[in-house]
Image (tube, rainbow, N blue to C red; front, side):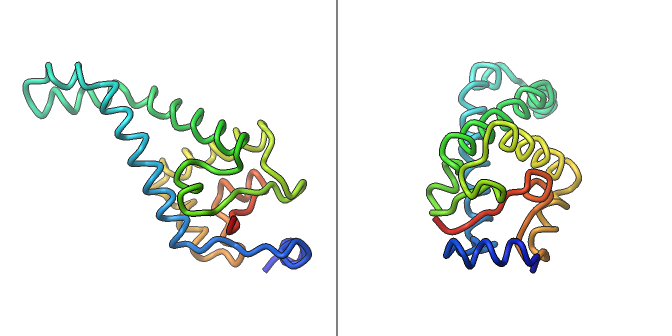
Length: 149
């Protein structure tokens, strides 16, 4: 484990969140955002006649969905140190430098690199499973840790 992070965790009496808790938080957040998108698109979906219509419609909203995810992640991480899924799982994101909620720049960095990790077959998330500090790519670029709250 990175010595700096190990000392920080020991000094502040913090424990890294488990992969299981992080995965559940991810699932909760994804279901919530997907449900909200479906509600927003319900009128459009009701007009779709075929599966191809639904696929074309869904593809037309990809950019909006990415922006919603970035705004959601940035706002909640900056404001509360956690998304709704993380709050439900009682885990929190800390900026390593301040040992506090990430500021806007850190939260935005984390949100953008989270999307990039998703686009590259979730490899950034897989990285976190094997990383001793359980840091995903978006944690590493933003210099954050996910801990038990």
